[in-house]
Amino acid sequence: MSEALLERQPVPLVQAGKFLTFRVGGESYGLEILRVQEIIGMMAVTHVPRTPEYVRGVINLRGKVIPVMELRLKFGMEGQEDTPRTCIIVVQVHRGGLPITMGVIVDEVSEVLDISASQLEPPPSFGLHIDTEFILGMCKAGEKVILLLDADRVLSGKEMDAVAGLGEDG
Image (cartoon, rainbow, N blue to C red; front, side, top):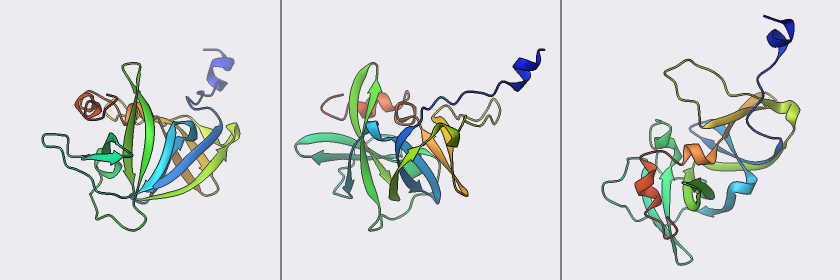
């Protein structure tokens, strides 16, 4: 094996830019700011029967029905009661080439960070049986690490097809 191959570092899937950072279960995550439509406070969520556990239901956002999922439960964390800091991040994802508006419930929104290429690392590899495909990359910000999420992969998947159908544009 040549030295050039040994020295080559994996290239992060994520590009430098602005990310909305938020906390879920004590950990920091980020989404590309261009995917974020808006941030809203918690509001009444209508439960929809026979949806995955992490789907809280749907909301009526200015006349548009939007499916809402709880990121804590999607990530296999224990659920918790909503707090005054709990909010919904409304994001645009692509499913089957079509844009879909969805809401994501997070513990709290932190800030918008301008992340440079030097702060980025590729997603970790934990082996064959751990799915990290939803992680675009990792950001080193001071002493903490922020997991940068791929909105399309976190909020999509086979089980999400039905959920996407809950919204008016799905």
